[in-house]
Amino acid sequence: METQERMAEQFEEHRDHLRGVAYRMLGSMAEADDAVQDAWLRLARSDTSEVRNLRGWLTTVVSRICLDHLRSRRTRREDSLELHVPDPVITRIDADPEASAEQSDAVTLALLVVLDALNPRERMAFVLHDMFGVPFEEIGEIVGSTPAAATQMASRARRRVRATPPPAADLATQRRVLDAFTSAAQEGDFEALVAVLDPDVTLRADGGRSGPSGFVRGAAEVASQASAFRRSGHEPTQVMVLVNGAMGMLGLRDGRPVSVFSPVIRNGRIVEINIISDPDRLARLDLSDVL
Image (cartoon, rainbow, N blue to C red):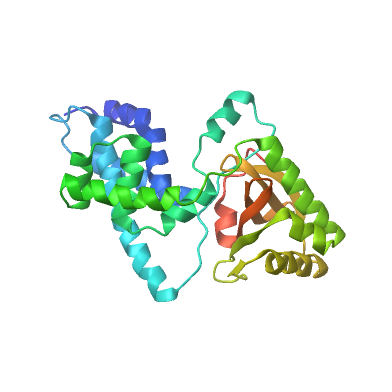
């Protein structure tokens, strides 16, 4: 058996990969870190002398931990009917080019919302195969099915993902549209707000247990929400940031985060808005790169 020190060194070599797998599975960086830590504890208690592919072994362990978590979470949400927006990854818009390139390849918040709607095994099959290239033979073992069934799970998930076209890849275009939305909201220009929104735009707001949550569809309805919020006098200071690699805004009040605004921009208009104002989750975000 490997010494504990050598085992820890090998685990650290795979930590970023495992964290990426878990985040795409769970849509929560805090929960992803917990899953990775759990995987380390299981590794430390295991005899890995016969393991020839430690990365694959750890990926399987993390995946099973995440699958159990997804199943438990799905039951809780069905009971509570809560609306949920996945946790974002916030970075500065003026980060160095290499970091920006890495962030542009990150999973978008809008995609995580789509993944959240999948059942746990479909999500697992899609993430492992389409994002990390895990063979269906291994996925079948993880989810407790045959390779053929795992293939079908990934196929169903893929259709759901492809039904939602990708957002604008050009950050400059995203910023231009977001600037137009912000200016119209600040000026109280209802017509300008409607003009920058897709007619079928959706707004999903997750305020957690103590804040406002809800789902709104339609340009006029979303524009009305934005106008009412501005008139309330509670609008925080908005800082332009990257939210999972796309343009968004971080709301600050007295230097503390109070909201994350993440739009999906396509064909020059906002087609989807995801807002997080849950104080508990915002307090756990890593904003060291931003504040």
